[in-house]
Image (cartoon, rainbow, N blue to C red; front, side, top):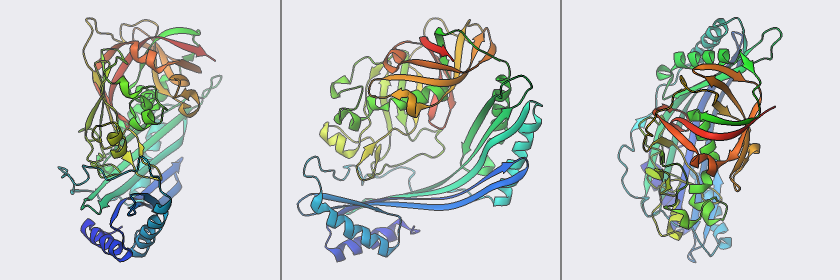
Amino acid sequence: MPAEITTLTQQVRDIATELGINKYDIYGSSVDETSVQVDRGEQKQVKASNRSSVTVRVWNTAGQVGITSTTDTDAAGLKLALKTAHEASEFGATENVPDFSPEATQPIAGLGEDRRQPQALVAELLETLIGAEKQLLDAHEAIASVPYNGLAQRDFDRFYINSDGASRRDVGSTCSIYLYSKTEQEGKKPRAAGAFKVNTGLANLDLAGCLAEATEKTLSHLNYAKIPTGKYRVVFSPEAFLSLLNAFSNMYNAQSILDNRSLSTAESLGTEVASPLLSVFNDALHADNIAPDFFDGEGTPTRRVPLIEAGKLTGFLHSAGTAKRMGTTPTGHANMGAKVTVSPDFYHVFAASQPEEALSLDEADNVLLIDEVSALHAGVNALQGSFSLPFDGWLVNKGEKVSVDSATVAGDIRELLNSIVYVEPETEVTMGGVCPRIWVDELSVTCE
């Protein structure tokens, strides 16, 4: 990918002039990644890759748009992509035709800084991961293996340009580690748990925190038991709650609403959709987001978007097209592709207010703490609002935790949101956002 956005902008402008194209935009991204895996102190796998993707849109004189994509980012590749998109525009739609974002040329504070970190050598990545694996294996005699692990570093480069003068580029780095350990004890089922951490570079990565979390979670599942099927008060970990929230993001996704594939309608704004204790924002620029997106696939600046405030649905996520159709402004959540789609990025969930009585796992009786839900692809019906999901967690009695052996939690997301009885004040940072533990009354749990 060209080193300077100004060079690329001029290059594309010259090609468009040569081809007789007056209106176009281009969104592109590139990821340079190195990752390692180990097995019992030995190198298992080393991978290096460079992935590029460019999406080109061209409008013809009739206002129709053609779209194409390419992985070839040199002058010849861009010329072919512009030419192909121009030819495809003859077959473009004539209704609800996408257009430039009205905010694509607005200045963005902080954009333009090179946030890349120095890349570590592969040998250093291997040494770091081998050391982490050894510490995890030595933590307890019951931990027999770390079958899934990985340490990866990546540089990313994103850009957006259009024929109206928009020109944006963002570069940065992330580094992540994943440790998933498994136990073996005579007469007992194997138990497993893991932890994941991410930061801007290897030097900033919380290795100790990842090890401590993986160790604590794995050992906490050694003492396990079946629980009776029935209704339980459930406490969702931040990660588990955000997984559920994201699975039903169609309720505040404007594209889903316009496609009639949502739990909400355009008239749902202002209605009660959750307990008044809950507020949910989407905020790509949150201070705890390691890799913030400053702009979306249409060049729109990202921002803090209130979705649910004190239980009321107060906002939708928009692209330029959905915003135009619904008479509002884009929010910076568009993904460029054959069709422009809308999706959330980084959540901020917090307590809108506190009940008179605070709840605590140290004092609660017969409460289920759900750490992680799985099989979201199969166990969620996003259009009906229902879910039935296997989970990892513990039955808690006055702070004493017993791991739950094979169980499923089921319910309706709308009922769940309205059954929230407590939102803890302390938040945790996860990959999907910032969120506290969420207490919900009366969820159905089936022990298998």
